[in-house]
Image (tube, protein in one colour):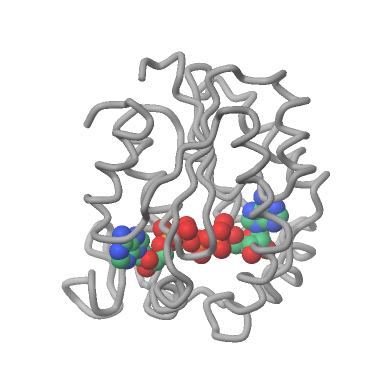
Length: 219
Ligand code: AP5
């Protein structure tokens, strides 16, 4: 995969490892990792008008409106750093968002959508155990990938926290929203011949190897 083909969308239920794999792929392909969840959480932290509206929806596991999200992504991918491509993590999340992406940029011939498949019980377990760095956003798993010092990020030393939407009832709501709104995107991209299906179980490195093999991106 050359830089002209470095347009990747990561799909999968909450906890499938989209953020983990997007970070690894971004470093490998040297194109930006764009996480709409991170963009929204930054807005929440800043207390912006968007952040205040988004927080109410995110805390319930619901989606922020499609037109708002398409606008955010439109502005972000117009950045000079996206000239050679991008890794989208968490967008599109509905068919209208996928159509919106096509309208924004024209159909990107090189765009590939990767679906990370992980069984339901495993994603629930991963999310319950996830701890995220307040500073650099690095992720840890309390038992499989714990930080060296409890509650402290190995990379930057900032405090780790548990996301508010990683509570059990919100995880259930997010999974329902995924089934209803996001899973139809698998057919959407399959019909376009742009879907790469990857087994998301095993270690992050094992998944990454499958991912780059599936994309033909070499590791
Ligand atoms: P967002 O932040 O995108 O959350 P999500 O899609 O629910 O995904 P997660 O971040 O929970 O999981 P992930 O798949 O990235 O897995 P991760 O790598 O972290 O969105 C949050 C909210 O924002 C939404 O609910 C919505 O309200 C709003 N929003 C965002 N985008 C939107 C949009 N486009 N439209 C509308 N609303 C939007 O891994 C999870 C855990 O597992 C971590 O602890 C990790 O260390 C661990 N892990 C990863 N890989 C492995 C592995 N191979 N083995 C074991 N553990 C692993």
